[in-house]
Length: 61
Image (cartoon, rainbow, N blue to C red; front, side, top):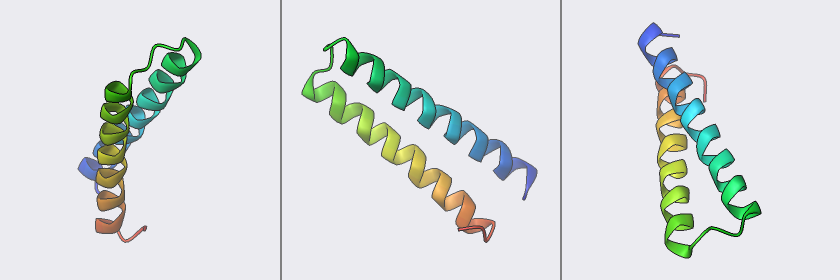
């Protein structure tokens, strides 16, 4: 895997995991508005799409 793509993939994975952790914390504290939930899911979807694109570029996905 290209070194640059590997770094990008790692960053996207870390960002996606942080988003999931933040959602879990907010859900457990009942502090999640519809707008924040939507914003977090859009960000998570974007990160996962970026990761998928990198994996496709590398012939992995």
